Image (cartoon, rainbow, N blue to C red):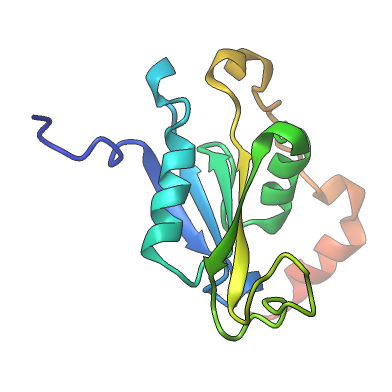
Length: 159
């Protein structure tokens, strides 16, 4: 019997994104440490959806993605996700009553008010391809030579 839950070292952080009112959209950051961790990210998303019925969409990202930066999340979606293999939809699930898209008028696949299709966007790098997805580091740049007047004004301000 393991001394700690198997997911504890796998989870890095979670963010209930403000774009979903802090309820509908979750960003889950994971760290795959070994080949056997591949697939755990989907299990983690399913656990989150089962635990928090208000969640509608979950975006899974690796540890090198800043979950509090929407641009970084969109970067991960753009560079680490393929729609035909990275998106899981779970139709016919009870959602949150304030989501206006959960009506049969919105989609014929919805059987009744309050029923939703939950979505998991897996924007994590497959374990076997990790070496192909290392982020290029940016060099530190001193911006002062590019805008000397601006920085001169800043230095003169009392403060």
